[in-house]
Length: 334
Image (tube, rainbow, N blue to C red):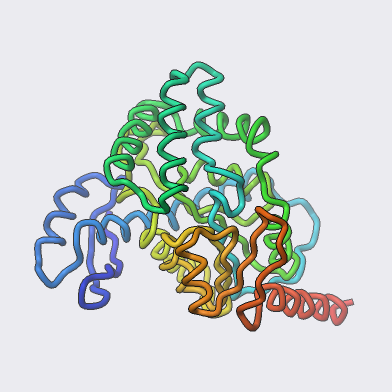
């Protein structure tokens, strides 16, 4: 199936057409062809953009499936702010630590792989948190192991494991302060999305458990309900997250200038820069410097310190304003 989109290249965005179906087949040849031009995007940029497009498609498909399962509850919907949304990173922003490490712990407890593999995953996460930079070798190895693990398994199995492990481990790792911010946007009638490198099926479990709208995550190719062991594009990270948010905004009719982005990592600056309001949550040192330079709000829940009210208007003010509008609409309907 052909799909048209825009790729962020060296000299601005370029319209391209690629064949995704079923979700990724023949992508290697297309990437090589598109990135061959010296004026076009690099292969990394193409993969990031394809990952973003696939993530937006998968997120909305999972959201539709959730709605179909729930059906008509008979409860009238609260007033909605149709053009505003909030986008939350997951690791160290919504969840204390790395969600994929927590998931790996649950898998190790179920004897899906050895404890030594878990130690290796944890060590790589520690290195990343200390340095703030990803090691390309670590990323490649981690991706290879993850794809090897899911290859041949059913998508339903991964989702079921995600629900069990969320309840056992991750539920207690949610930052209360970040959860309250997400609820603020929900109360204002806004959509709230998670944006993460974690597989979209697991990210959707976290979003569902928290009562959020949905999740943008890494999309692994599947055929007939089973994973093939290949990714669609690449891990959703950096530019990929930004493209996923942009793609979702187009599909949902969102005005990104009215949206809010939240993250702890400087790697998410491309995503944060898309939104009208950016908030650094538990920021690493590089993101803290960027936030100070750009006047973004900073909130640090690790130490209990009060938010640094740098940005004006702040996300809290925007949320309160949106909530006031929603309440006013409700009163008028009554």
